[in-house]
Length: 417
Ligand SMILES: *Cc1c(COP(=O)(O)O)cnc(C)c1O
Image (cartoon, rainbow, N blue to C red; front, side, top):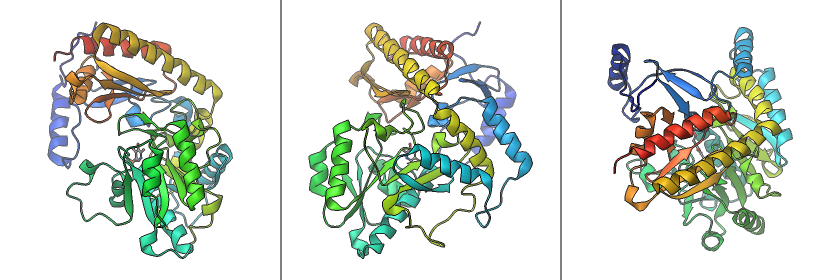
């Protein structure tokens, strides 16, 4: 029987490792005091033998859990054939993956591969600017609008697209050409910002880091209409909400007939191997020409071989049924928990992208509660200071989820505030 709360790290070896991490890493992260060692399904183990139900999936990445046998096989097979060639040569896996992605998205014609979400958005930003340039627009007429609460990455351009001042501080001068719309989901506010200088609008169909804020269906449709009216590009950042996370393969299809001009993917695209992608529609399919953009690792055969098998699985209706069922269970469980504990103001989200917003008395406590939950054997994320964020593997079993939610309830019940 495990006794909670756990005191970790318990072993001398893990304590030492953590000290070395603190000594040799730059200090931009604050990892929890444990060394994760291995995982299977939706469970991970630390070096001292404690198990944790993983309701965070390494931030929406491990959507098929840990050690998924077909992904392991794909990785091993490709590792024995060819690791890397660069884009001077064709290999089979990125061709297969690009074709599958295009066939699964009504709007997309072509795919650019890179290694992360920030890079996928960086490519999108360059494509927007080049498109505008090709239309004869001056550099001042290539503005991109993004929304309060958004998150688009940490490179200089993608962090500038990220409309949250806390991510900008100290990194000025920021590149020009970005404008912010406040608030999200407000069509009137958006229309007021649109000028002849506007080239594109970028949005997350469900804001992730910003607190799990779904875009309203009518808002999405309205944005598309405004883009059509003013000859503006619509870019959807599905890096977190895409790849089946919300119970449909791509979250923007929640507004059924919505056709973006561009979509960025990363996180669960590789299910744990680093890969990002920028998908372009008809208007943009010829923008990137030889020499205009690139990445040495982009389209790497190992990443693409894994992502290709992952995509077959993520696109399966059976998996989407699991997402819906487990999602209902989480919402029901939270509702019951809240009757007992009254700690949440709202539980929101779709599929297995769920945010539980804390009551005002618990504001700024999300990180402390998530750490407390860890010591009860369950990993949950936060989105901002006031929201607990659940992004479990999409193939989490009922048993794994029940255990995770029971541990979370025990943790919440014992949290003193
Ligand atoms: C995580 C995330 C990114 C950045 O992805 P990285 O791989 O960390 O660069 C961009 N947009 C959204 C919506 C994200 O959730």
